[in-house]
Length: 334
Image (cartoon, rainbow, N blue to C red; front, side):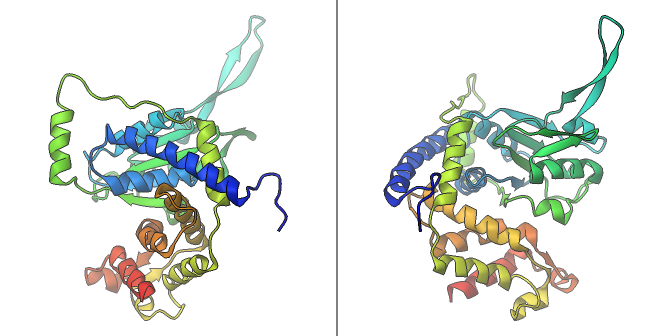
């Protein structure tokens, strides 16, 4: 195959990967100064950003989800905005609105005032508290990277990432995210309670007079270079087949008995796309030049969990989507 101007040869990819790995190590070091423990949460959130996508962080309040997103914005050198989603939030509160100006001659005209969505890193805090109308306004931004106001298109900054948080507890005043919007999130990152040692460090480090501030180690241009490199990393036919087998086995009607019994609907092609990108990013994150089957198995839960739904009978038996995914991974490993 002839090498195009934008593609890299093997030596160039190795050199670029080594440089990117050093930059990623700096990012991890800075984040660890502020976020204690939660290694898998930090890793999966970073993988989503390095892959050029969005992530949904799910966990009970007080687990540093907001702190992680804020820290990543500072460390990656991205222009960041935060929106606290509430039931009365309107689409214009996110996208912006037109205001009427009057010049010195009395002539009036409309001017568009950009909303907080015009950021490189948008934190959507408690996204499931906003109404479906407001969520749909964010959906266009996440998928098409532009917004349309009064028939006029406005492109969003590049890169553009949405890191949203969600409380998994059923509470009054929440609106479950529609399946179409869930599918736009590259990964769902489940945030669990910290381990004892990490929680002890949290108590000691965050209740004093001074608090550690992370430093920017990348900028938007460098992040986009790493994202482009990840898309150029080779993926073997064996890994591609493993992705297809895993994603298709999670769909009812594809010959998997456990899935047919327990799954109401399964992941679409976006799940395979997410797996391909994140597997490459995970390989680079761990210092490898190509993804392996281990990457596919490790990413199965964050990629598939929000793209599947169980039957009523499976839910009645106390089964969870994670249980089904764990079974599929076990089958894949043989």
